[in-house]
Length: 247
Image 1 (cartoon, rainbow, N blue to C red):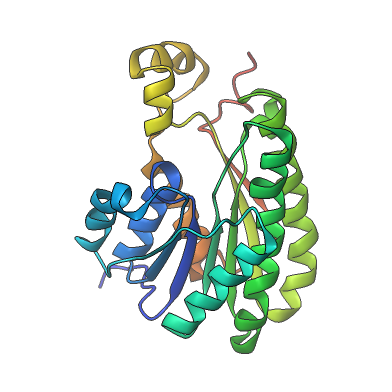
Image 2 (cartoon, rainbow, N blue to C red; image 1 turned 45 degrees about the vertical axis):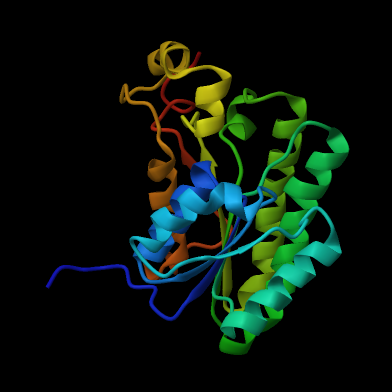
């Protein structure tokens, strides 16, 4: 019998999951049996097609629009999830905002801290939980979408290790994924696929552009039992772009 990742009975919160890596992650978690809870500022009616996509492969996700840039929003998201589904097993801190320093501080860094602390008591009851933080390969290369994005994603990388040491005693394993350049909907609109590919393909040893699903598969690994011996790690998911191809 083939090995399968089965998250049936587990509840997963994925922030910023109306599109991009977050959406691909939510869909893959649902396909693996998890009940997914999405929080995004995009109005639910605008995310309806994406929610239908997820519902076609698994349980229909719950959708909230709480402002996780505030501690109150984070706590409310966790409380409402537990109220509706009874538990939280997985948290994927994916939401991003980097237009201003204040916005990035609240949505990228503080939301990661506040949500992780908010889910900790429930996960600790079962001595089991997985938290995955999405950072960036720019933390290693010095590239990325500007100083605001890099600074706070770098802070999340450090925060991952800080929290992992303290949460591990409760059976909660925290790791991070640092994606390379991913062709998301936002990137398609911003640069276009042709320009994006022309710029990044020469830098990538495997000569293939990353899609959101490529990152989602790595997040799934960190959310399941296959990664139970990994704590406090940041997986550089860029197909060797930084390590093997100095540019």
